[in-house]
Image 1 (cartoon, rainbow, N blue to C red):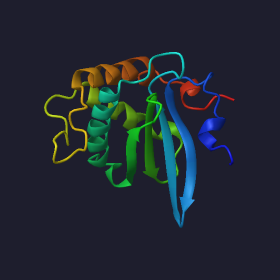
Image 2 (cartoon, helix red, strand yellow):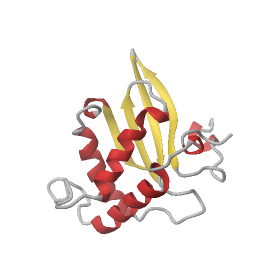
Image 3 (cartoon, rainbow, N blue to C red):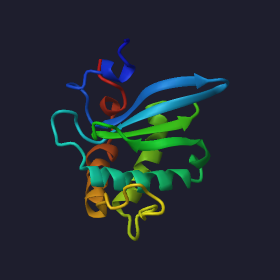
Image 4 (cartoon, rainbow, N blue to C red):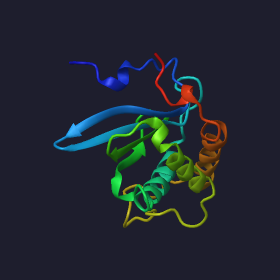
Length: 159
């Protein structure tokens, strides 16, 4: 089997940031997959699964209701390794194009109050796997330490 593209990235050099993971063309449409790397792989603890699940619910709801990008959102969810999230957008984008959107998203999550969207037995298959407090902490940390002063090293995969 051929190695998939994401396994070709040297994760020992990968910093937290916003990266274009891949671009695909499906018919006449372009899809951009972003790697929202919240944790430095293999150097810091992965996201807690309950925090990641909570951020997925808050993030997906925020993004699909966004006034500018809502109709372009295809998917938002955690990576299997729990070091970040994938965001798929309809269109051809670079990392710098979505910095403001990702800042809005993680600021919203860090400041979120109230019931987590979709956190009921009727709406979610594992609704008890939620930790709003930890999700807010992780969102605030990513915002303050990465997104607030993001630079080129955090927008382009390492060579």
